[in-house]
Amino acid sequence: MRLLTLSRDLTRRKAREREALFVAEGVRAVAELLDSSLDVVGMLCGPQLAGTERGRALVAAAQGKGIEISEVSEREFASAAGTDSPQGVLAVGRIPERTLEPLRARPKLRLVVLDSVQDPGNVGTIVRTAMALGADATLALPGTVDVWNAKVVRSAMGAVFHHHAMTASWEELRLFLESEGIELWAADRGGDSPASLSAPSRLAVALGNEGSGLSEPIRASATRTVTIPMNPAAESLNVAVAAGILLAGLRG
Amino acid sequence: MRLLTLSRDLTRRKAREREALFVAEGVRAVAELLDSSLDVVGMLCGPQLAGTERGRALVAAAQGKGIEISEVSEREFASAAGTDSPQGVLAVGRIPERTLEPLRARPKLRLVVLDSVQDPGNVGTIVRTAMALGADATLALPGTVDVWNAKVVRSAMGAVFHHHAMTASWEELRLFLESEGIELWAADRGGDSPASLSAPSRLAVALGNEGSGLSEPIRASATRTVTIPMNPAAESLNVAVAAGILLAGLRG
Image (tube, rainbow over all chains, first blue to last red; front, side, top):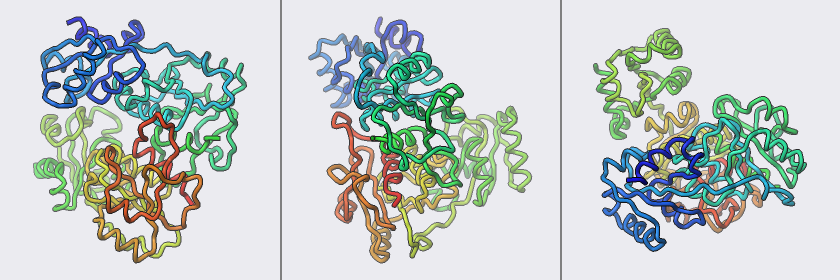
């Protein structure tokens, strides 16, 4: 019963930050968590999980790793689940301690900076994209959805377990960029096309809110604005698609 | 009452194809539909719509255009709505007739081919991306979610009203590409990086299913395989992100 209460509690960001724990939900996310190096505190299973082969394999894998498994009713499971049609499995994992320190003094560096990106699906897809395209870290500034939100974890398809995704304050990031001499480029209107630019070996690229774009301090600190050339009749690109195009175009 | 029954009916693809009508739901999608050149058959409003300024402005805009407005109860509206928290507005629009014919003999051409792409959010985001990056059309092959599905319409953010998105059979597309001498490139593993290629002025790029990739006939017909270089530890990119990177990288 303790794991059920804990899982419910961890739907709130405050609880995740206090406990340094998060929830991965669904067969795929849990399987990826078990395969990662992260510490798994326990697994919560509803009766529907035993109905599928993948579900049974997952339980066996968790048992093999000595992970505590708590079985609950379908109704209890639903009370902790974030999805409409839960697959009957979630795992509680320990949030790894990640700081900016290991990113210092790298000869090549690509950082993705998220400034109030609010949709969990977008943030998860950006983390997945950043990992796939070889970025070193994704830094979520205040106003951005928590990278350990269950929906972010799900749409990142396991990438958040491996990629250096973390929350950072703007002050902390600003000092880091300054002391390391790393340029910050802003993805915004009215700038240069990535194809026309030669990117420095160490670079941070900032992407803004889905509706209102980048905030003033980030805009003001950027040494350059990059703009993906677009059909003038189109309003905008999805922020995760924009992140992919910029990371691919600014590989350096 | 007729519009309510019709809207409910149009949640099924068969009904949309028979009636050549579709549903746009939510304030933003309806506003974009009213601003487009598409024919609007009627608008269905729940009582909650009048509670917001944007909602009232939308009703006034529809009245100004002489569009039939049908007011229903919140419960009736919910029975036709595809979202969990409906904003109380949907419009029924006429599906424009789109064929491959106007795409013939263009000196420059970029076609996006979707081969069993199943998530409506992905297909909508691809249509939005294709329009923004200047592609001429998006062709949804059988097995791909209908481009007039309400979730596709919503995530395309209005782009499906303007961009030449349409369903096509593989046979029809194959004959078109052959007769026009247009190359088909396949987005798949084990091919060349877009950065290493010089794209022909007329090109079709095929993207496959989220899990299983491209089907055999498409693979076999492609003259080249393009692969976005990825971190080997990463499993894959989201298909809409991949579409954006390829369209941006193969502008030609």
